[in-house]
Amino acid sequence: MVPHAYAQEFSLYGTDGARKYLNRDERQRVLVAMAELPTDRALFALTLAWTGARVSEVLALTPASFQIAAGIVAIQTLKRRRHCVREVPIPPELMAALDRHFALRQAPPQSANQRLWPWCRETAWRIVKLVMGQSGINGRQACPRGLRHAFGIGTLQAGVPLNLAQRWLGHARISTTAIYADAVGPEEIGFAERFWRPGSQA
Image (cartoon, rainbow, N blue to C red; front, side, top):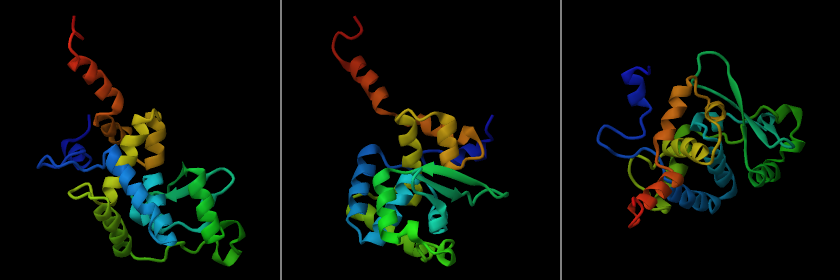
């Protein structure tokens, strides 16, 4: 049983009923807007969207975080008490763009552990808020956490096993990841449409 306070913290809706996550259409609009940003900002925002990581976790990435041939980024989970690193696959196109821009393969030893994006959290937040505004998205979901929630929901709707989604998101409890399964997916809409269709209950 998940404690009530813990469940409330990870609910997909606020106490006022406002949605905290981007739906599929909103996320797609945001991805398009991200791709139109200046290169370094676009790559930051797209890495945030395609890893489900927290802003501070993406800001901590260095050239050494990336396994280019494997298509994997190693992310330090910053909300755990003990040191924990999770490996998350990212789209090949994003990995190639990161490699081109930051010369990840050629990074000398002295810069292999230097942050790719030497910004503060406020700068990162402004980038996300900018693309949300450009995408016509307002409300509680128009923030980095809305992106993270959208990643969690999207993985489950795409059929990613729950335990794998848990690992990618860096959740300590699988019950936290399971909350994302509460969002209505396209398959569920399909069942509803069959129910609405005249004669479907005959």
